[in-house]
Length: 207
Image 1: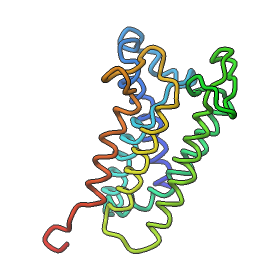
Image 2 (image 1 turned 135 degrees about the vertical axis):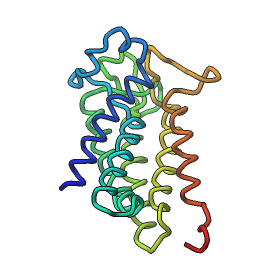
Image 3 (image 1 turned 120 degrees about the horizontal axis):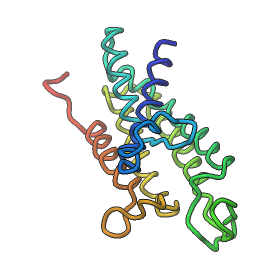
Image 4 (image 1 turned 30 degrees about the vertical axis):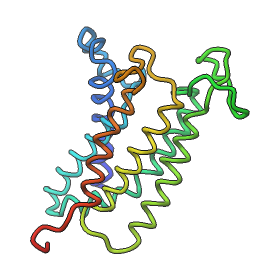
């Protein structure tokens, strides 16, 4: 339960501060008290990930455990949390997709009268279900420290980058790089790179 507490605090604080820093810094610089208004919405997975990493580092140090022992244990369990979060986004009719004419497109009242991709369900399927299965199977055999965490980061980075092509960008941001790359895609690149390094790095001195 101590680990659950650390992770929950890290995810909430990191998620909120990440949203403030990555998605709406200019607004919150002039409305700093609203940073605390978490009930109004505004959380970032990438910020939450940073918060969880910090929480795991603190927990591992205080419990005298290896950081990657804890991180690799948690990695497969993150996907069900993502699944629940994206289903929640769909039920709340938020973070909808781009306008589309595919047969399964649907109208989100807050998003206007045109049908859109249900991008929340795409993320739920990829980041929640498929990523869980891949990481769980991979973790079922002995792996080098950090590899399970690395695979999770690689999978999340790839899936999030892909789904962003179907997800409506934040209105106040739009594309942030090259007139097409969204903030979600930009933030997913370092997630993928760090994950690939953890997954593919060689042992040092046979350790």
